[in-house]
Length: 156
Image (tube, rainbow, N blue to C red; front, side):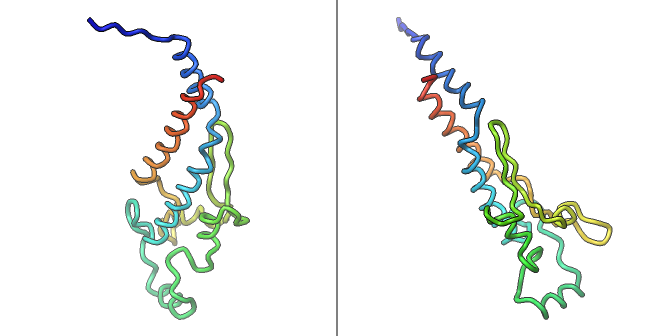
């Protein structure tokens, strides 16, 4: 026969730690923000192809103009404002807000929405895409590590 005893008091303390952790995820957002920035760098380096469909190529006329007037800048990187606003946390157009139960990251660049959704004259080239499995798992691992730490701490 096997007998198992449960220390209900200690179990309740551990569950209280999980409950406290779930009420305030603020400690994880900075790390998930870093995952986002690395992800956006990969999206831009692959011109959207890192996850899902690659961005539409430039129109032939614009591609010729861009080749003559810029030093081999990738799609959506003519002046670097949009790219910088998404990968530089200190950029004036970078958005990062968080609270106990949310994180918001993005850009204040006004024309970003047109690239994200496309227009009648411009194809959709979303600079912000859903995380790939790799980034999703990285974010989940960050949250799980935090919850494990909160379980260890308990309700102390």
